[in-house]
Length: 217
Image (cartoon, rainbow, N blue to C red; front, side, top):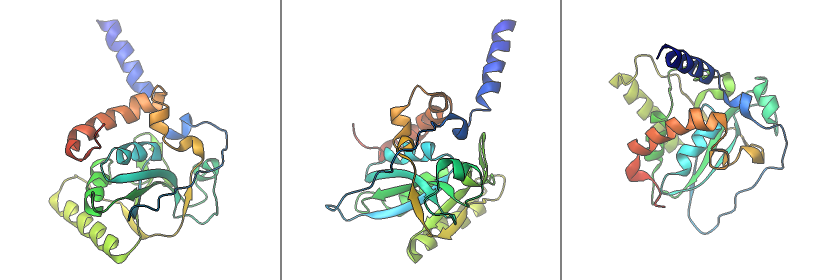
């Protein structure tokens, strides 16, 4: 029994140091592009830590047409993952969400955003640390800005978290798709360590909370 407790503690210690940056491949692949001209769509750009997690959440929502991991808000054109991880480009890891507003609203996407990460930790989500992992909403118009600010203020007032929300709400500046190996990451790499021990537990909780909003298999 004592030996089992020691082994369990060792596993937990190892998992606490698993981060998105430690798990990525190094091969650079040409980015993909979105094409969908048949449905009237809208766009949301959210950053809530590692974009592998964010992508996995929003991909499962009914009404979401596509989710593309990328980099936003920085000052360097066409940054690479390595450059963003160096913390010198100003970019955040974000998910670009293309959605059908007749099925799922921006308000509903905001609800998912706030409930799938800790918006009170500055430049950090779990073991992922650095400005590229900051909590941020890049709004595309005044309506998105107003909704995001209203939701943030209401959550702060409600005391949903013990600490103030530090999520930045900023005008859309730029977006660069991440390398192809980052796209659809969880679905393609479910046996990889970060996916198994970090994303999967979050995803299981997410699917219970938002069961009514998920796509039908």
